[in-house]
Image (tube, rainbow, N blue to C red; front, side, top):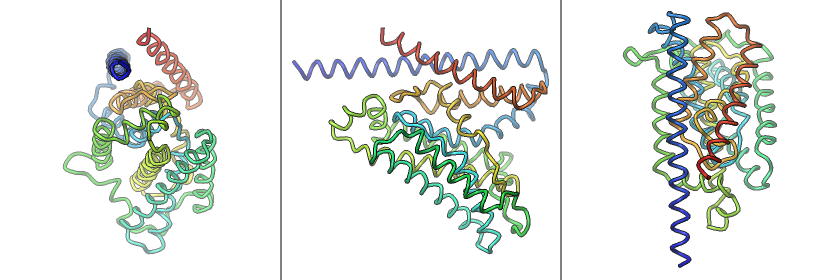
Length: 329
C-alpha cells in the first residue's frame, strides 16, 4: 500500500513538472513571438538578417553560461560569480599568451582556472551548507579582483600573438565560431538535463534537499559538479569574448550574472530550485537579447535598460510563482 502511494505521489510530481514546464515554455515562446511582431512594426530594420545575426552573437555568451547556471538554479543554488570568473579567465588567457605560451594551452589553462573557482564554490556551499549567493558573491569579487590585478586596471592589448583572436573571430563556413560553441554547449546541456543522473539528482536536491540526502544522494558530488561546470562555462565565455575583441578587458561582462539569471528565470526556472529547463532558458535569453537590441535601437541609455531588466526579472519571478501555485492547485 505504501509503495503504491509513493508511486502515485511520484507520478503526480512528474505530471506537475512536465505540465508546468511545457506551459511555461509555450507561454514564454508566445510572448517572444508577439514581442518580435510588435518590434518589427515599430522598427522595420529589426527583421534584417544583420540585426538578427547581431542578436545571436550578443546572447551567445549568455546562452553558454546560462546553460550551466540553469542547472545551478535547479539544484536550489545561485551562482553570482560568473561575470567575475569570465573577466578573470580572459585576463589570464591574455597574460599567458603574452608571456609566450601557445594560444590553445593558454586558453585551456584560463578555462581550468574558472573550473577551479566553480569547484571551490561547490565545495564550500555543499560542505558547510552556506548560502550560495553569499559565497559566489565573494568569489565574484575575488575573481574580478584578480582580473584587475592581472590587467593592472586597464586593457591588455600590447604583446599579444597574431593568432590570439582566432577562436573568437573565425568562422565555420558562414557561421561565426562563437555561435558554433553556443550550439554545441546548449545541445550538451540539453542532453545532461534530460539523460543524466546528475540532473535528476539536481532536481531532487532543489525540490527538497533533506529528502534527497535521506534517499542517498550525495549533495557534495552533485553540487560541486554543477558549480564546476558553471565555472568552466563562465571562463570559456570570457576567453571567447576576449579572443573575439582581440584584447583583454578586466571590466568585461559587467552585470553578466544578472543576465544569466534573467534568461533562466524567464525560461521557467524556479529561483527556489526543483524546476526548470535549458530549452526554456534559450527562449528567455532570446527575449533578453531582443529587449536589449530594441532598447539600443531606440537610443535608450544604459541606466534605463538596467531598470527595465530589473522589472523583467521581478515579473518573471512573480509569473513563475503564480504558475507553480496554479499547477499545484
